[in-house]
Length: 25
Image 1 (cartoon, one colour):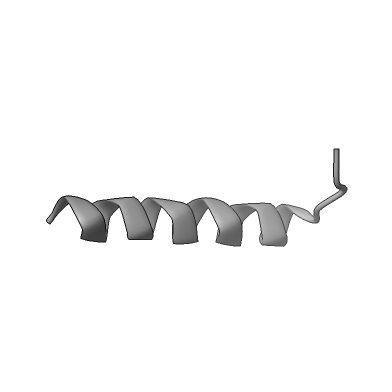
Image 2: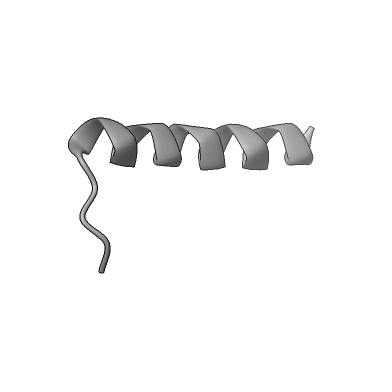
């Protein structure tokens, strides 16, 4: 498991969520 800072983890989550939301629209 790669070690990520909390900011990096949050950015990854938000970017993934944004991509899924855009693909759903």
